[in-house]
Length: 550
Image (tube, rainbow, N blue to C red; front, side, top):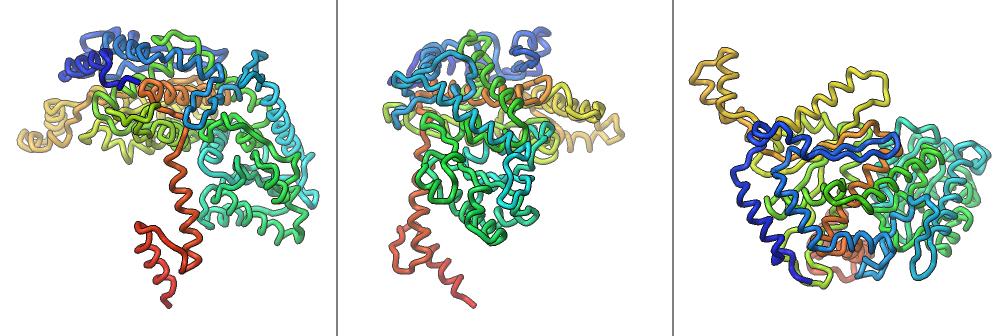
């Protein structure tokens, strides 16, 4: 594979970047009253709308054209078609990548190795949703006959971040049992979660594809001890534990009936698995109908991504804009700023989707890359972020693009308070773009009564350079369908960038090495004679010494 940096399209973009060295968004908006209209796109899907405003970026029309030319040069359309066709685009593990099949509720077949996988997907989904409805309606009870009031999901990584994010995001639509998430092997995470719960009315979901994940299984065994100690019998396990896994043998050995195991497939990456039976906690919270609406929203974005012209394609545009800053402006990080408290875990979920996918240093052929790949993804909900890290975004030396995400409508009656929230969102994107000159700062201070000398002294501290890029994503409301659209939008954005960078976005070998060493060290911490690697020997010795001190 030709190194990306050697393509003529890349060289043209580098020249474009150099030509925009003196570009400023303040001047761009002043010179072009139609700039917003030129750089806004809207996807309409049923009652839902997703509007992408990318007018506040360091681009002109020709910049966008050049980015689109790069996408075509890297055969992005062919890569998209290959994913949707079930080809084995995860080349290091020889797997298809078909999370899109999990939310495709159409009758269109999708074959992998000559077998239509859609019937199996539908069968597992129906079983999972049937369990959710039985629990929600009180037809599934605990060992003593008590109705299930609380569900605790035991998972980590994609088995925790995705379903947790979506469950929190859809809080206004909860009408089922309370749902809790435990991921950390730190015993305090499980202990503090269980303190207010009643064993007789608690259901555990053990989410581990292999049923061997050390953090998840450690928590699962501790949860089983808590339950059995309270109810007095191992037989209680069967009514209080279900599994999302593919390891039927170990699931049965744990005490979970085969009928209560919900499988998924090796073509579902963990960070893309909330659409599968990993989404059981979501279904328990919001029910069958709304869970299917969530899938339908994601599928609507899939179809848009699969068929829309690149110049109108929201995931393609977001992906290209991100690449523009990583590779041509040196942006090492990207901030996600959802203006909704219910989206408090959205940035955390996107950290895994993006950084685990595109945090790679070699291309598909194993050659070391000559360019940067995935940025650091981070963020918190607005308006909290404005009183924390926005100082860095506004006046820090680093260039950090921002995605603002906001809804036109609030699910609650206090519309006046929602307007304040939205005003803050729009204000932050505007000030990032336009900034404030030193002359404006001086004029403000002198008008407020400060002396010219004092205004001159303080002006550098009150100057905002502006020209800081951001996208604004505006939706009508954060309902299940729209959250499906939004989440799939970012999944496909990551795909676009990985395809252009020429990397495998669907393996995660960087996660595995730490697991292997941790397993060895766990044994060594309990056995002073066990060998320890050179990098860990000193700190392991210090740990043993500290524990031995009285």
